[in-house]
Image 1 (cartoon, one colour):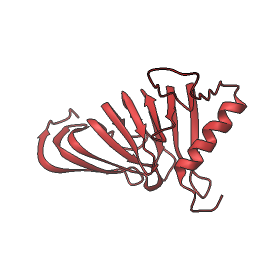
Image 2: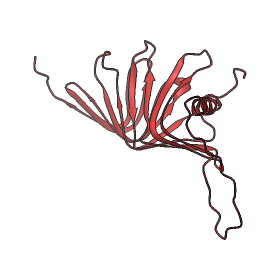
Image 3: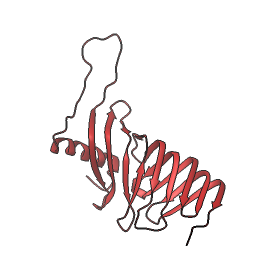
Length: 189
C-alpha cells in the first residue's frame, strides 16, 4: 500500500472493511444457469452507509453518506443514490455537498454528482455560500470542485449566475467562469 495507491482503491478497501465490520451484507453475483438474456449484477451493494475516506497522510479527505451505493463490476464504477458528501476545508470545517445521484468512475480521480446538486459552505466560516447546479465534479485529493453547467451562487446580499465553476474548498474560493450575471441586494443593518 504505497503512496501511489489511488484514493479509489482506498475507498474500495474502506467500503469492504466497513461492510464486514458493521455486518452489512455484501453480495457477489456470478452468472447463474443458462439464461437467454444476460443480466449485469453488482459486485456489492451497501444500504444506509457512512464512510470516511482518508488521504495518504491519514487526514480526512471526505465523508460520504447515502441510502445506497452499488459497484458495477463490468465498468468498475460505483453509483450513488442521493449522496451527501462532507468535504473539510483546511481548518476542519465542512462543506455540505448533496445531489440526486453520483458516480465514481473507474479511474477514481473524481466524483461526478448529477441532478439538483447543492453545496453549502461551513456555517462557521463567513460569508455563507450556497452553490446550485445540475452537474458538479468533486476532486477529493485536491479538495476542489468544477462544473461546466449553469451555476447559481448565493451569498447574503449577492446572487451570481453563470456558466462553469471552479471551487477551492480549502480556501473558501468560488469562481464562475463565463456569462456571469450579478445581482446585489442590500442587506438590512
